[in-house]
View 1 (cartoon, helix red, strand yellow):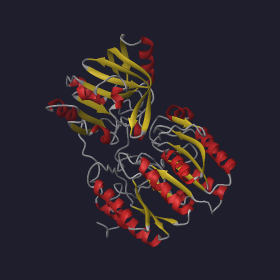
View 2 (cartoon, one colour; view 1 turned 90 degrees about the vertical axis):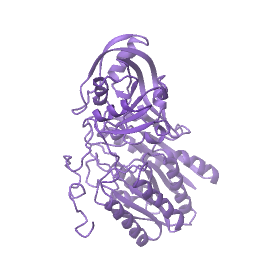
View 3 (tube, rainbow, N blue to C red; view 1 turned 60 degrees about the vertical axis):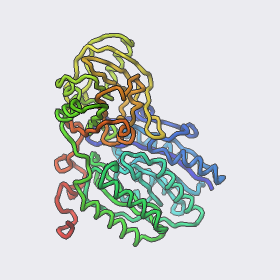
View 4 (cartoon, rainbow, N blue to C red; view 1 turned 90 degrees about the horizontal axis):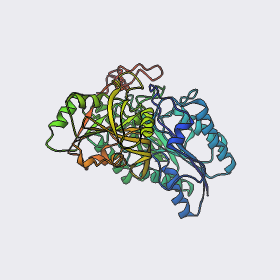
Length: 489
């Protein structure tokens, strides 16, 4: 068997002011054929898992380019089209192939192309014809469009949020691909539109139990090849935005449709109960200061670069200063210019510095302080499961009893190695502030005395009922109370 694999992924917050071009991929991950490292990045696990599967079966794996950019705003037209065409040219040169296995995200939007994943998959389908199966793994914070379902043979989405299972789901995808190529299964996809948009952390109920139920169904029923809940991405203003359920069955579309509907209506019945309870910055800082021991983790949930924001909000930092907090660390504030100034000054220098709150309204005010430059690190990385996540050149600064990490490549806080990379012991701090919605939870919960979810400022459009959508459907809950009709509770 000859199987082509590649990856092209980013998550587009269409409300974000941080437009990106090809340099954003080069800063995060750009790996031409054969140059992808042994460990996967979030959306490239199909490639690394594929290496092992192909080696075990004696198949030929033809690797195309793998490219990932950290979430941001609209993708430059030339950047998308050049990366897309690069991968398509590689596929064309590899023909004939027996299958395609892709790593995608599902919420990428480019100037001129709203449904980039649908565009790429459809062009691949045109190249290989109707008889060659196409498989892809995607992030659940995405848009499941009709064009993607038409072009692909089977799609598998991460089940967990935080996304700790991207390698496991790549294994699932390859299992379906192998069984298809060896004639044991005939995958068909069934989709149910929940007609809602919400946030679904699997680190808490009720989503934890729902996802566990999906996995029990997969294990108990041979007809079910995969079940996915596509959360949707509320910061993506596109026509097919919203939560959907996808069932992949072995030639049982009727059964898949019934099961997807059952799961989807269960989600709808519990709408509004999934998201983590949040408190304001004043309450969060006061509660953290009053805690008997640390570290207390405060998650700055809506200034999350993983959702496409800049990650430069200073609202929580200003609150810490106003309440006289000490022994706290902020990880991170994105400010490439401030990092450059610190790099020029050098470790140990004491300099006046203005940083933060440059990207957009609702992010607070820039901070002016005389800071000590404690440590400087070129090309800093943190862990996220099996991945190494870059956050660029970084500076650890200290002032007024507080520590702040400034970074030059936007990245949310995934793991305590974010702090240790800059010489900070997170266990020795009373308060750890991370800019993340929930991906931090898996790695920080084992060390945290408490976790507080904080809504600070408005860098992210987090209330769909009030968001000024131009392209997304206005027929979803919570924009309307009963999108399924009065008969559905």
